[in-house]
Image 1: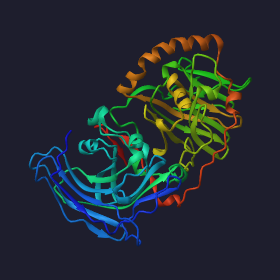
Image 2: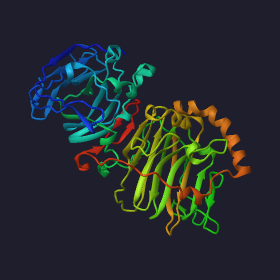
Image 3: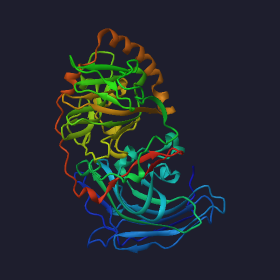
Image 4: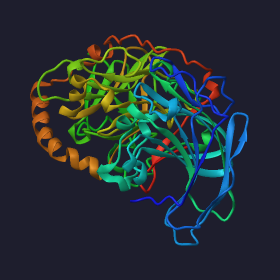
Length: 493
């Protein structure tokens, strides 16, 4: 879609400052909207008032105050525009030269709006064609009041109309030219919002795993995006003492131990030293998985484990841990050959106390990224491009099966439900591979019982997590919750 820019007003941004850039720094400030010290370059700010047809956007002069810039004006469609834009584009310093941000993982940004509205954030590179078509990665952020946000860069994507012609975030980060923040929805009332400090955090400064959770008003978040379709589920709704459906699950337990069963209240009881592995009907090659779980006091693990047709150890087969618990230590991450204990692939997590002890764990996995959420707050994202080649191949060679494991102790793990969602385009990528694999895998495992005994898997040592402390108090910002809206765009709250 060709964009016609009917008015672009460039401003001399005397109130911005950008410190020295360095990929090894915990963070870099893109703009703080304050008077720069002597000798410091001043990045350009451009007021954007763009519409498909002339006359549908009217912008006021930018308002400048200490630490921010105020945008106001009107957005309409009286002249027939199907899209409109009002906002600002904040360029890089250093004479406008693009900046390599490939080492950075989060965008920290302050947004202010007197009324609830959706703002679009776009990270732009240097390709003029992509700039004109609007096919650099974006997300939509719902804003009301003053919000200091940490947004994983992995959630930025080109808009759906770009199809295969857009730039992914991995392609954009090595040469970032500007950050754009705009309002795009027409309104009878004046449109107003403010933009404050913009900062990028690298792996060392990534606080996504420990930032304060969103308030209860935005949860629970079911898979409301119509593109996600329920593909497999177990709600555990049978009567008490009924054992789990072994057509859906493969059961493992310690010799003499109790068997997993249902409690009659819609929950699974997984006794200590036992585990369940989903049957091939629930196998995943990409998709979204959601669980509501009450973890025991001791050891436990909820993970997707690789299911090759040949016998491989757990590391060679690969594993995506939604949550691993060893006493008070909780973390998540990836396991595969070539992946060590780097914080890029692992994250510690904290569970905020809940009234019934249950927590929602979810994971979205597509060809571009893997993203974890805890109680509907995004806590970690890993781009495919960031994963070493050898490890990347592990996650693309065979399907993965959900494992629920309770370690030795006195308390069971309780599971309220397990739901696996799929999208048509992702299902098409994996349908043929799954069909061939399912028959062969069931045959191999029924005859050889190839799964590793639970006593060995639960007791598996976990690498230490060397995750740096956040540079600022976690309460200063919060991590957004993101989901795809009906138009296929990432919407964050």
